[in-house]
Each structure stands twice: as C-alpha cells, then as structure tokens.
Length: 226
Figure 1 (spheres, rainbow, N blue to C red):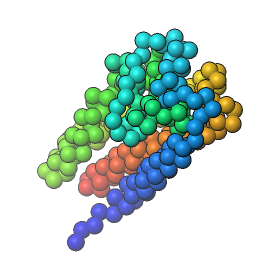
Figure 2 (cartoon, one colour):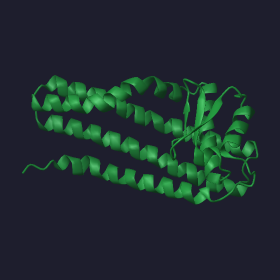
Figure 3 (cartoon, rainbow, N blue to C red):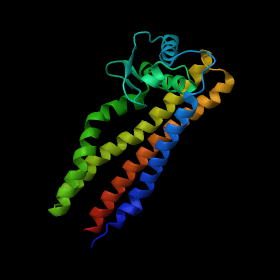
Figure 4 (cartoon, rainbow, N blue to C red):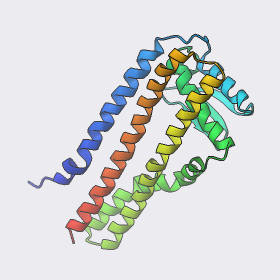
C-alpha cells in the first residue's frame, strides 16, 4: 500500500496549527463576549462611531447570520456584523466590529494591499478550486505542463492568503488606535480588545501556512516524479 508521506511532512503541521488557532479565537471571543464594555455601546454603535469619526458616514452596517462571519465588503461599501457582534456591548463585540470598520478606513485612505487583495479574489477563487485538480490530472496523465499550470493557478490563491496578512494586521492596528481616540474603550480594556484581535489574526496566519504548505507539497510531488 502506497502512503504519501509528503502530506505529513508539509501539510499536517500547518493543519494542526490551524485547528489550534480556530479553537483559540473561539475561546477568546467567547471569554470576552461575557465582559461588558464601560462605554456600553453595541458593536454596531461602536463601528458607527468609528466610521463617523473617520468621515465615513456613507458606509452601511448590516446584521448577518452565523458566528464570527463579520466582514467588510469594499465593493458594496457595506460592513456586515454577526448577531453576537451587532447587538452586544461586550469587549469582543466592539473589538471585532471596529476591526471591520478598520477595513473601511483602509479603503478610504487608499491602503494598497487592500485593493491588491480585492483584485486577486477572482483568480484566487479559481486557483484554489481548479489548481489542485489540474495538477492531479497532469500527474496521472504525466503531462508536465498541466502540473505546472495547476501549481501556477494555486500560487495565486497562496498569494491572496499572504497579502491578507498585512491587511488584517493593519486593520486591527487601526482599530485599536481609533478605539482609544474615540474613547470607546478604557485603557484597561485595550488589553482585552488586543487579545481578541491577536487571536483572530492568528487564524489568518494559520490559513496562509496551510495554503503555502499545500503549494510546497505540489511542487515537491511534481519534482519527485521527474
């Protein structure tokens, strides 16, 4: 029986790290979801205050279903917050809401990595889904060009994940600064908010490592079959 040890070498460590990061962000978010903020603002109200302070009163804020599904849509200029964030006055809710508002500020200030990430979305979606399949077909048919094409396509998805890192870290940095400038959180609450945002950021780091490890595995397998 053939066992592909390349998976254990390249992918398994990153996958384990990703699982740990997901557990960490959920536990940290749940922990500070029980800690009310001194400002007594909901996530929606805090995000609105940040946006107004930044001159972005035209950004819509909507409630969406799911947990930790919060995101900013730069195309439609809409900030979407999950129920736990939208309606809650906790430290977690405010931190996450203002992180997403930070993305809107990025767009307004012309933060280049945000625009680069947005431009990569179509090709990254194609690369993440079609790239591996194209590689597998090329592998079984022993067509090197198909293997290389699959690797190149998947590389676009990996690039998307890597560019996401500075975008997310920068949004969190902006959020913490704006939270202080607008007096939404007290100094002692900043530590808790930072912990929430840091744990969330680690999930992006883990996702990037998973994508990168899968790319390295494809390259390794392709070269091994030469």
